[in-house]
Length: 339
Image 1 (tube, one colour):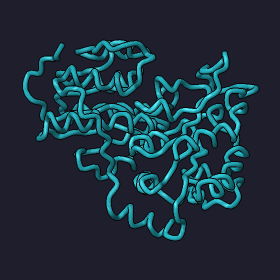
Image 2 (image 1 turned 120 degrees about the vertical axis):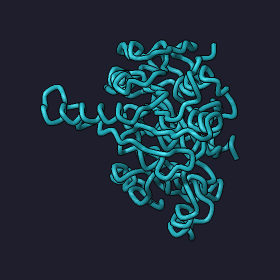
Image 3 (image 1 turned 90 degrees about the vertical axis):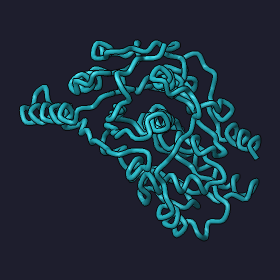
């Protein structure tokens, strides 16, 4: 069913504030909206930590920064509450015609409702009663369907279709030139991405370290470690590798992954960037579902242990067997299959 629009929207707001992987999953939706509504002013509401990925994006007119951490204190901090309501008023004043909430939580639904847009669209199975804020609710498959497929259902209902599924990044020649200076003497290389936002999703760092020598000896690949500054303590535990953690912003990280001959990654935002770029990829999964949030349309890149408690979606675990039983040799075997 196609949602009837009173007229072609002049101003569109995408609400998908976090995290990096979620932003990557939403890039095909931005692309389809731009193709369908080429003259519309498209804004994207997201957190500062993710904003760099979309900075100066050619298909996007505006980034609206949502300071989630500060506004999250609104229930006990009067100053934060005042700021949140001022932020909501600013959204109303922008007079959006169409608002698309792909986060589907209480806060994002509330923000969608605060815009007072004539058309507010979200998923019918949005959590925390967010669906109450929408004028139109799109029904999709089960929650076991990949996130991108659910998002495509929303823009399909807006008459944008489901194809092409493309991931247009903002990375440009300046980003690539900067990366050239970092890896100009590296030769062919594999990028390891040991960071992740859940401790339970983290493959043991000593296992990553055990990949370096076999990658060089078997496939003539040097090793580059990448990620944010928070990954530096992990990277320092991997000898004989080029440590670029904290030396790239998100656009430059994308340019670095473009150059990689192979990427080995935890379930993380940068992994989704590498997948969207179509790189040779090995993804390490344990507590989360590769069906729901794994590398889109590339199940062959997933390496995991088939044990009864996985996936558990838990951020805490006293044994982490799903990751610890995933040996370096098993991962290297999967590398061999990609070569």
